[in-house]
Image (cartoon, rainbow, N blue to C red; front, side):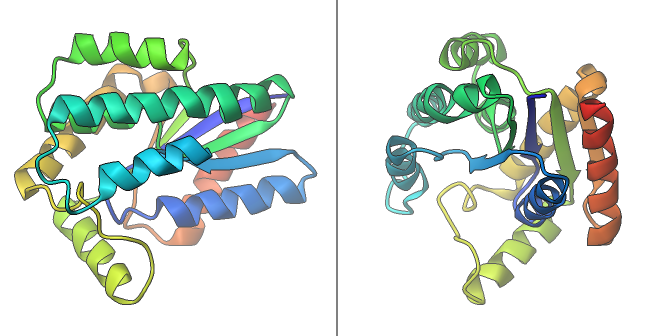
Length: 210
């Protein structure tokens, strides 16, 4: 049975850790799993990621940013996600379309209806079965990410350098989407122990698999 699960959350919320744990647990059950990320997941997508996250590109307009993310997503869906789902596999993605609504919509203030239309075109209407949102205060999340970057884990990129108000709007946008689409969202407090978060995610995914 195919299943499409995405992980969303502010910077430093622990998405990578939870994705790795879910991937391992599902593979231990003998299931075929594809783990990927946005922007990226393909050679073209990774090149676009470099442009989007480069600290030198401070002059990038929000609409340019949104179109580049959408271009990377179109390649990602067509080359990786949809083929894996058609093979009956489970796809786990670190970020997906909801990131564009949160960051470029709620964060930068681009028109939400326009973003929904462009995102639908880029994805061919493909939506995740489950969105796992790891919620965290933005100041704590950014502090975590700065610490990880200093210790040689992860990157500090152009999006991380946005203002605190921007990141707060992004978080509020995620929570608004979760309220509007509660049936396919799992909202978790990212300050809980890793093992507890893992179990809640795993239980929800297994329930969807039947």
